[in-house]
Length: 125
Image (cartoon, rainbow, N blue to C red; front, side, top):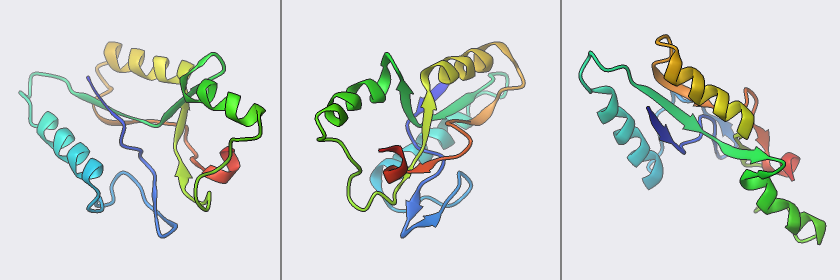
């Protein structure tokens, strides 16, 4: 199993992109694409599951727990315009995705470990 932090949905000039779109020239996207491409070339007898994880949120942990204290003192809010896409997943859902990927042979290739609908950053804040 391979976990990456490359979000499945993002925006460039507010254009919606998906996992199948070509990556732009940003370093981290090129590294993730190469990493995934190399991993998928492994021995055909080895099942490979690549989970693309969004920002992990949970009441008692993850990114949300770190962000809440800033919002409580009115110091939190969206960065920039807030129109950027925010791909997220709840920690419980991520655990389920990882468990399913480990235990079910049908889980292989690239798997999006995010909520089905990303939100704009201003909506999240």
